[in-house]
Image 1 (cartoon, rainbow over the protein chains, first blue to last red):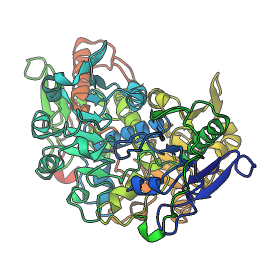
Image 2: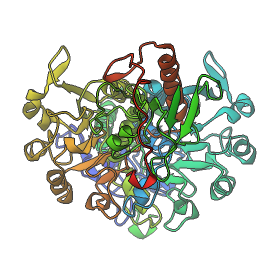
Image 3: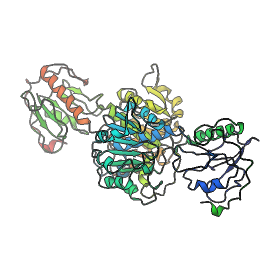
Image 4: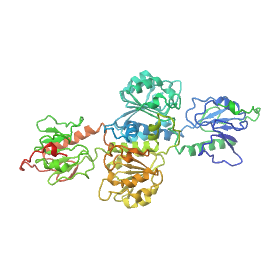
Length: 319
Length: 319
């Protein structure tokens, strides 16, 4: 099997160097390697125009994403698209707790002002006794809940459909006024696009904290910016529109906003975990076994050796 | 009973206004009220020279502290000294988790640089998989442990004396090289003063995080500053020497130091809890019942009505 992966220092497949596997590396910019023989492609984080590159890979069978979200990628049949579901849940949940605690305990104010020493001591909020509204109860939601357990907070779970212990999205108008913290941990779908709009935000109490580790488009960003600029709400955002935000963006310049550029999953343990996943997929592909984390296409993608080799893409044509 | 408490907006005793209780308020600066009749005194946070004020209170029976630590206060017999043990454990433990997570996930770098947008994404450490060495296993230590439980960290407990699951301080030379995070949660005693010195710090691995919510004097501060200035270690400090650090202090100006001026217990829930404690002590004192949280003197301090009324202290004599 021939695979194309990003040239991250820690990304090394377990079986690399064996006869069964050929590994090419490409960061998505500059000259691409010869793509005609690639069967498994792993696009780098934040890659833009998948379609153009896929069209240049005549034997491509599988696109393996490094992310959980796949709202920005479409692959044509008979290709198989796989994501990295579960792989980042713990790291993202840890970022959520870090961001909630830092925001409630006002660490940004001290980090920005500790040099001057002009800030008076003042009482902060606490997570103890706060009500956390967790919207989305998949793998990341469950990992957030596990970490919240020791903090004496009140947890309200919301998901697309009600089930025991979990409220339906339709109940949000009644639930939002109780929330000290709202965590957005939903996939981006037609149902969640723009979920957090003017009415959603207006229903939150003064001082509530909006945490987004889902996708920027889950939020009506101008509406959120209005509530943040006035100081009525605060936010901890790992995603935004566009993602990442450009330098100088208004959201980066607000003291009541903690912003990181899609970093919640980017920890030192990310590459060993991704290496294992990609290595396993390559082994399964070579053996004709079912792939894991399939989100579209067949879990045993057929060989495409009968297809004509396409024209090699020139680097100037790659976005 | 006549009590003197600090004039904090949220500090109101439950039985205030009743005939049984007279409440005076004084912030420790400027003109003191008539102190001759005070039986229960609650000094404000950070009060300096207790002895001079106590000498002016001829009927004083009890000094009730707002803090857990009482290393900086001595009261002469037959007075009773009480602390606020247990009252701040949860808030301090929450600060410890906030500070560990913010430091490991590099939130200070993003908070300082998010405006400029010049910082590249980079992999951070995680609490998951990290080894946390918790030195001190009293109430605060147990609350830290409860909050750590969901984070997949390795916990090593250390206390003055070994017991099942807890190592003795003598074992530190063997344990320190394993620590990604060291949390200092010990009382300041002869045994812990200067515990964290040159050898202790040198035994820590590169990049280790030192968290201090104990007392500044537990640390040899020049030794710590050397390790921090070189960038080899990092720190999250809620206490230091002096406490709080003056504006412009070197420790405030290091990017690898998260500093708050003794703020870990100062949350919005502090005043209801302190009000209940002081109210309960006043009720017990009036009824001749045993006081709680006694750290020196009798738990049923005798009336001192037979003593001569001392000269009233002029404000210029109060530090």
